[in-house]
Image (cartoon, rainbow over all chains, first blue to last red; front, side):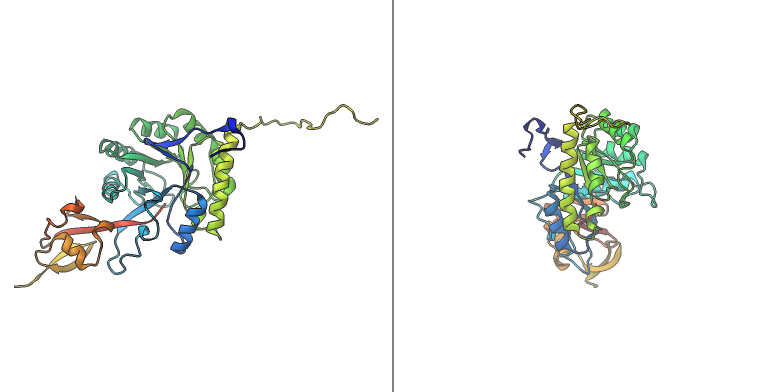
Length: 265
Length: 70
């Protein structure tokens, strides 16, 4: 994309050897209806779209599948292991997802606590190691803990995805310092996943220098998901561009913008 | 002789045709084999092999697909 300022040309957003044009990744869950979901995803400009693996409902077949509504040729499908509480389950879901035949990428979630949906770090690392060994490109959903992020990178994850705040909470970026330090220390892409509530949250998150954001509920639960998707698209670009532009230093005193000279007596 | 057998399909007991292949099972359920992934007794069965695997009484079959998720 040609930006207003040529010197701000961005580096490509690449994960696991593939380059993507949008730094905004979106989920497909919890929309009131499929038409709204499709229009919101279009408005978001996202290319990577997450999906979950679940049993086919044998009583209401066909239209229940998300791919009935979403063109898998147009979007890069990122299957998740949402709902899995053990490494074994996550590996099982990941293998089923891969068998669908789209790609070898998996958004790995191993949930350790049902109230907060925070990750089980031990299970996450175990699953990441198994899946990397099995040829997967693993994008690991994790908390904003640097050491876990480093271990996930060591395990061979293609990207590490610290949360902004708990899944579906909309609380925004609670710990910018930790996310910044994770980004600074890791070589693999850092994509913030979960917790963003509105456009300013997305902008502030991108201003930390992370490579991208994955969100679902912020769009699906907005009063107008399509408009919010458009706002998120702008916010992610604004935050990224502001990060590249480099913000002014914070000062605790005022510095006048107008000259002090030439004032009238 | 009874022409159906009981298997566990997506967690529920279900009577299916005796000697049916997984491909025939999908057809009987009006499911497109390209739209589902099949797990038979905890092992994934590749799409091209669905016609080669027959279900036996007590087998566990899981049929999964992609749904909306974050």
